[in-house]
Image 1 (cartoon, rainbow, N blue to C red):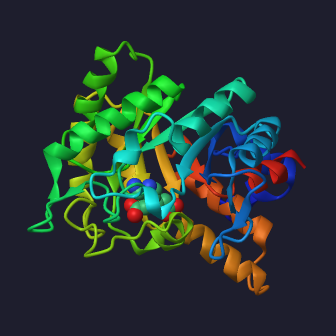
Image 2: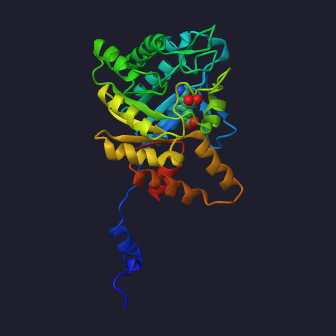
Amino acid sequence: MMLNRPRRNRQNEVIRSMVRETYLSPEHFIAPLFVVDGKNQNIPIKSMPGHSRLSIDEMIKEAKELYSLGVKCVALFPAVDDKLKTPEAREAYNRDGLNFRAIRAIKESVPGMLVMGDIALDPYSSEGHDGLVDPKTGEILNDPTLEVLAKQALCEAEAGVDIIGPSDMMDGRVAYLRMALDDSSFQNTMIMSYTAKYASAYYGPFREALDSAPKKGDKKTYQMDPSNSTEALREAELDTAEGADILMVKPGLPYLDIVYRLKEMSTLPIAAYNVSGEYAMVKAAAQNGWIDNDKVILETLTCFRRAGADIILTYFAKEAAKLLHR
Ligand code: PBG
């Protein structure tokens, strides 16, 4: 005789699904998309099999498919022509720029789709940094960067973006952007702050996609040290006080402890970004036949939810939505 047999609750699928604690569904996903200028462009990203830089016409097709699969939010990342990149990142607030044309196009063509716009200067900066760089010292200048980010945020809001995602990690940016938006009557534009964004090597494929790697140095003076977790709580307190609507942790898988800690301490919804390097690792192993692509994707995303992520930004969004519809 044995009193406790946990296996009794696992003996068939009916009881397993009755006691299941976590659900995964396409409405939790945000699909990142890479946009490029031109027409009929679909330029594969080598380190991200299955993903391409898409021209706006192609991106619309992709967004429609995502929407029909139940993925109702996209995050846009423009791959900007090198010729348009300057030290001041002026293209970041050019109203006719690719980013804003892409936002407008989705809002017009896919009604109901939420659009998230990135706030940071790296895709537009000849230096490849998220903030302005002091030409003499190489320092990433915090307060002057805030002014540029606010211009970028206003252009995105005017183009119709639903959510801005400051991914720059400058101090005080959430409050600065909230005030700038409110001053221009964009009270309803949401802020999903990259609250705990780490200086991670997992961003490699993304930087290939946008050709946005720093020209000099690294991002360690603004992105967080992977060794720290209490500091993430501090960032969360600040972003909350500054008016963030949703807190995000990035990268995802190696940082699920941070997702869990933020979920425990915060009353705000928590998002996690399952980043490009995490996608690339799964794809590489699956292509070698070393792991089962479909099962690993669903397990991975379920674990994000179990750890406490309400929302998951993931390059698997479309594939996972299809698998869930089966
Ligand atoms: C830049 C930005 C990065 C990512 C999103 N926004 C890269 C970086 O900080 O260098 C990475 C996303 C990914 O790897 O999927 N502001």
